[in-house]
Amino acid sequence: MSTELQCAAHSVLMPAFSGLHLDEAVRRHLNQGGVSILLGETRDEYLSRKMTFERRRSEASAHFAQIVEHATECAGAPVLVAVDQELGGIQRLHQLVPGMPSADELKTLSSLDIEARSYEMASAARAMGVNLFLAPIVDVVTGRNPWLHNRHLGPDPAQVSRIACAFIRGVQRAGVIATAKHFPGHYETEQDPAVARATVPGTVASLKEGMDVFRQVIAAGVKAIMPGPAVFPALDPLQAASTSRAIIGLLNETLGFDGLIISDDLDAVSILRDNSIADTAVSALQAGAHLLLVSSASGLDDIAQAIVDAVECGHLSREQLLNASHKVRGLAQASRAQVDAGLYVSYAIPGGQLTRRVVR
Image 1 (cartoon, rainbow, N blue to C red):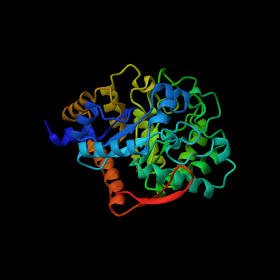
Image 2 (tube, helix red, strand yellow):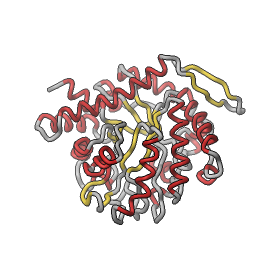
Image 3 (spheres, helix red, strand yellow):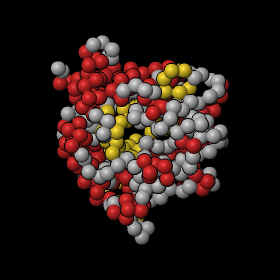
Image 4 (cartoon, one colour):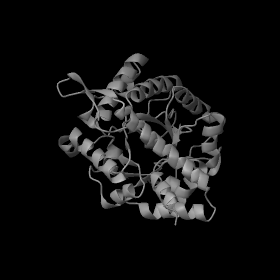
């Protein structure tokens, strides 16, 4: 069994968990080659779009710094530490970082103001060790979409693009990777893809406005993009965007994106579509994803082994797996290199005073 393949298979998995302690499965995953984690939220927090009172009362910046240090020790390498820190949606870091305006308020601010506020917020996150935001949401929602209710920036593609690009510039200037989601744009879907099969109806032409926003964020330099969890029959009638070779190929070849491609949650019913999580992970890699978002309780060792088995039996290209691993590890290393070079970040403390600190 190739140690290189085992290490690579773990490095393309990003386990999500809602607490601030590494469980045994995640520690073992990091020891075996994993280099990313998602500090997520509970299902109830996801549905309510806010962190619980207990979490807000008990969590402190030091807790995040401790888990980042522990994860880095387990991995023996720089680690990508992700959170959902959406504009107008789920904000995992709650009051630990300077707050961002609501979606409606953002529309009244200049792009420079949004960029400055985003920089300030992301700088505080970077000071805690967080270096990857699964944000912004850039879906241009014009129809019914309960999944993105109270999470999106509205139906106007020009405003969505303007706000998202300013956010991306500010966040990435602070040393945090931004992730534009959810490609190719879920303008309408009747179902929550986490619990049901979701479809985005319409023709290729109906997707144009949403796709144009992704062109704009790519031009703004976004470093990561997340394909979504729904099926787009006009593009691929069988696979959800996160496991669709046609849709990810569109992102690479037509839009020219060469950054990190992060799958949506592979445990989602709409992505699984009655397949096993292990087979779904292999399908996402075959389609061109680099980093796979999975629950920490989904059997990380089994998923990694399935990826290795797929390479060894010829179902997944060895080169494709290693390239994905190098992409993930390269971004983690680059993030650490910024710190080693003395990246100064700003952060706000209670009372509103702004100070500066270097992360080491």
